[in-house]
Image (cartoon, rainbow, N blue to C red):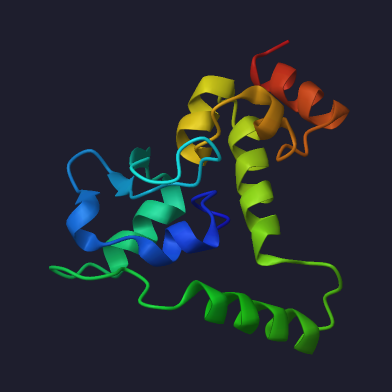
Length: 143
């Protein structure tokens, strides 16, 4: 989730048949959209570690992660409790993944291709960037 900025259900639904190995992307079927309940398939680029994870699991067909998303949520919650990590939810990894994309210098339209957000109003809730990120970006630009 951190590497792909995808929702838990999207990750658990990825099928090898939907991977475009040449273009390093995947079709996410029926991606969540309040306006479109069905048929909202999107091609999403798989970046960095997300691509590496997918390649390491490569099979001819089937789901990449053959787990029920509710089971993943339960296991994640149990693990954070066991490790005494307070107030961390699986969905927080999506927030952090989106923030990383902005920190890497991607603009709103490019981040929205990865995250699936249709407008800035909704995407803004997922960003955790601040003053230090502005300084870091300007430094990277040599200013």
